[in-house]
Structure formats: structure tokens, C-alpha cells
Length: 338
Image 1 (cartoon, rainbow, N blue to C red):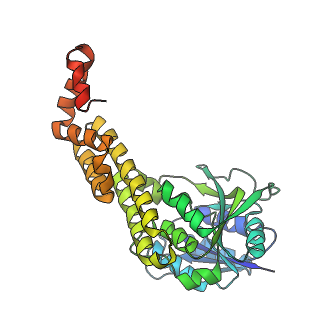
Image 2: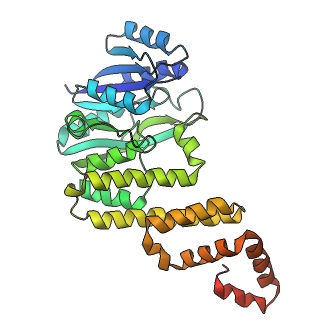
Image 3: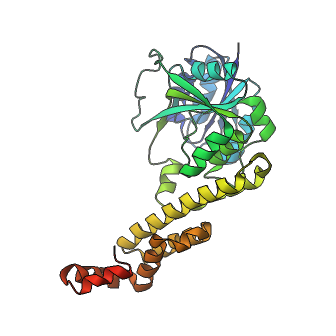
């Protein structure tokens, strides 16, 4: 029977840890083995993890003597994994009932599939959305060729996968290596891209994991700074295109598609910042778009934003109000007013 090794890194999530582990141990189907890695948490993670390991032989536990950070902790877990498949599950997230049986069933049937993912359910309460012993839901699935999946992802730009819903073929994971320390915020995106460049991708049309949203989520804090988010995404793609260029028959086209999406998103966010009166953020987003995709320079939205930034929010607002009151002044719209 196939085995899934589940890595659970934990830092200051002692109060969520038992629920996370139980969501794995309650899975039907494949064998499971769990490694909890306490990254020198200041809370009582040590006591909870030690107790879980004592209760069930499928659970192992390690504690760092100093805080190593999430990337080093993830990679330590990946090196530990020896099962057929590997899952990296944050201590504040949960697996949905039947998630591992669905993922393993697909990957056992299709050896060319390097990783499988499905839907996630976001929640903010202390309790999971459904009971962990609920009957697994019916599901559909599909296998997507790596090039097709990459084309879809690059056309979208932003990361579409949260992480707890992903099961990876361990042999492929070890062959391609771990997460990059240079990408502390988007290492997972680069990982999915890298895996898809070397394999097909499986998608399961079912809820595969519960993703907890709360004020300590790294991604939520990052989302408050749009420019940083865009910069981190671009860095992930830069690393991917550089590392995997020999695997891509249309790498140049994929790169253009990706950076065009990111640049246009930056221009849209530049406009929103301008409307809020934040000229500094607006100009930085504008410059990011300009440097990411030189092709936007000739577009109408680029020209309008350049003009708006040049005159500033105060003058632009005055001209806009004037153009709406005065039929003669309305001709100003021809030089950039929306």
C-alpha cells in the first residue's frame, strides 16, 4: 500500500497542532507517517507534539534548538520524507476527509503525475468547517500535461495554490530539490512551476484541505502591500524561467505572458493608489509595470497613468470635476481623463 509522509512545521501554533495531526491520522486509505518539526516555538508546542508522538507510533517529533525559519524547516522535512508521496501541512491547517485517498488513487494510476492538488476551504474559526470523520464527498479529477498547466498558470500570474491541498511524488521532489531560501514569500509558487516543468499535474475536483485565515497568516500580511506581492511573484517566475529554461519549448512566450499580466496588474493598482491620493505608491507600482513589461509603454492605460502621475492627484481631480461641469472643458478628456 502506498504511503504518504506528512511534514507538519509548527511555530507558535500549539493550540492548532492536535487538530491538524488528527485530520491526518483520521484519513482512510493510504498509510501515513507524520513528522512534526517545532521550530523553537515559545509556546507549549513541545508538550503537545511530544504527547501526540507518545499516543500514536505514526507520529514523530523534532524540536530545533534555535529558530531556523520556515524555508529551512520545510526542506528538513522534505529530506526526512521516504514515503511514496509527500505532503507539507502547516500546523494551523487541516486535511479534508478522504483527501489522501483521492490524491494517492490518482497518482498511483498515473505515474507521470508529479503532484496533485484540489480545492481548499478557507475558514477563520477555531473549529473546522465540518467534522473530520465525515464521509468523503464524490469527486471528479483530471490529468493536465505540464506545458498546458504552465501556460494556464503563467497567463494567470498569481499563485492559485495555497499549499495544504498539494501532494507531491517524493522521488520527483527529492530529484528537483527543496524550497529556495531566496523566495521566502513565493517559494511554493516556484516549486509548483518547477514540478510542472518535469511532470504532468493532477487536479481533484473536491475539497482537499481547510486553510485557516487569521491575522498571523504571512500571506495576509503580504497582501496589504501590493507592490511587495508583485515583486515576490516576479522573483519566483524569474528563478523558474532561469532554472528550467531547458525544459520549456516556449519559455520566451511564457515569460512574456506572465510579465504582461503582472505589469497590467501593477498599472491597475497604481491607478487605485492614485485615486486614494497615495502618489508615492502609485509611482512605484507604475515603475514596476514599466520595468517588468516594456510592452506596456505603448498602451493607452500606461499613457494615462503617466500623465496622471505627472500632474498629481490634486490637479487631476480639479480637471476632472471641471470637465464634468463645463462642456468646453470636457475636451480635456481627450488628453487622458477617463
